[in-house]
Length: 268
Image 1: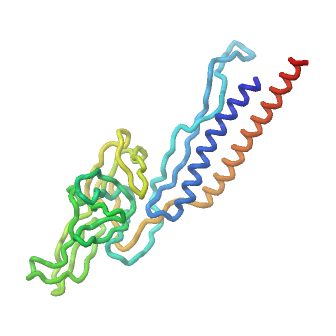
Image 2: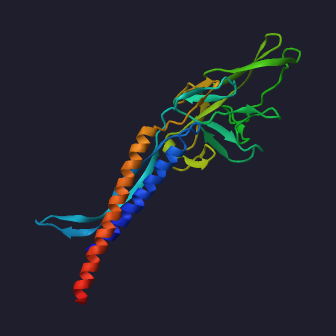
Image 3: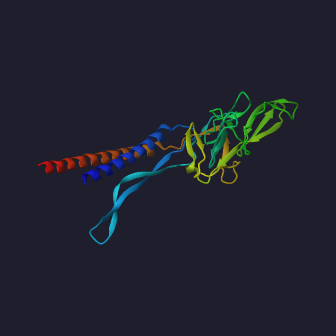
């Protein structure tokens, strides 16, 4: 029985070690642009059936396990930057980006820290192309070909992602529209690091469209989305999980003591 107690406690140790890792990751990303807080879902482990005092039987518990990790997709706080190419999504959706050679896989991100590259493409901080509603890289011209190639003096992005430029003559040019992708199950997306996600069979394929339509949220220009991690909640979880980890450690120590007692009785 003491050996079973120890194995059950070990399962608990492994569970709360994973939980502490998730909380630590949340805390470490408290200021990561577009980061989404993660929550651990716990489940119980059972083995074979065992008899009870009556005619009923029940399954014997043998610890706990992590059933999965879910993300909180609520929008983080708005951080004003004043840079026209910095954008955030208020509500559902992701920006789609593709490797700088235009042939690599497509990633999805909530990080709208974009800038215009030396080759004229709108890119993220990883050098990936930002894609429009048609899934094509967005090019930002420096002149208005419709107005005697007048130099474009300023740019702006609407709440639906439409990029426009105003040239030195005051003429406005519509350039392109930033695409916003939505998913039936965003919790199925796979984290790849660098604020990027990829699709999986559980997330379903991306529904690429225009901001403010369907399930897609609207775009705010000149701002970035901060992490939605609540540090107060994470610190409470950290203390809670640490106490649970220590309690399981105590169970192992108790099981070890009982086992030593049994061995001593047998040897005696």
